Image (tube, rainbow, N blue to C red; front, side):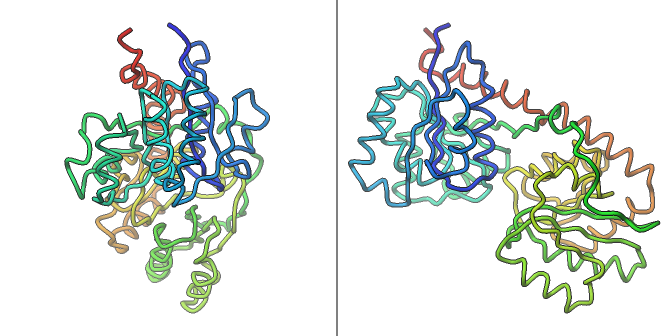
Length: 370
């Protein structure tokens, strides 16, 4: 089969789940069949991390109003045409608005939007045009994300054109020695971990409620919260006000999550929503039991009662029940942790993610029937 060119288009300046997915897929596709190129922001993290690779890079800065710039659209269209791009996969709404029509103008046959956020798509005239007349397909990182795409308008795009492809973790790299943990527990202490941006979506305020409940129930514990974000000061101040300073520790950004996972007994995710809780998979890959609210995409990752526990709704008392059960039963923690590792291997490995993408591209490519 002839080599086909696929462009991963992601103009984000910062690094996140979408950028990691584009990086992983671009660097791992079968080079005998696909020629990957990447369009990224020259001063962005994705561009920087690919600069030393053999993947061709196209520097582009896209803003929320770039779709109004005909010169920008023409430059991108010329790039697609010049590189003979067969497929383009975009990541940001701003990229979709700008690069999507440019790809259509250039005659790109497979125009794809990867959606990684479980937030409903607005039912606007522009979105109806983009989803209905420009896109040939969508990749969603969970069934929950797929559901939210169509929540405001079930006819926005044919559901059959939305493919769910879970994120993948490189277990071989993950298993490499990361050294010691970042925290030394006291004798008899249960260490509860959480990691993520300190923003409202991630729900770290629920962890303060959880700490109060566990304290009242007499559990010896510490909650480690890894990450940075705009709510860090207010969360730390609130923890201090509640007298939780010795129970809740804000570690700041942790560059190697393997060391963080080595430090904990139970991982807890209190997010308000998750397109795909990648950090849950990291915890499972580390053999740690996980606890999260039973909503959004969490039930797709956690097998309740097998790899961890799902607490009802946003019920922190229920979450505390799950944590207490695991805290008092080491054998249960080890069993859930081992099951979680096997679930990560079978469903959420990077190899499975790449293979799923390649199979879907084969089925949707304009050249698939040739």
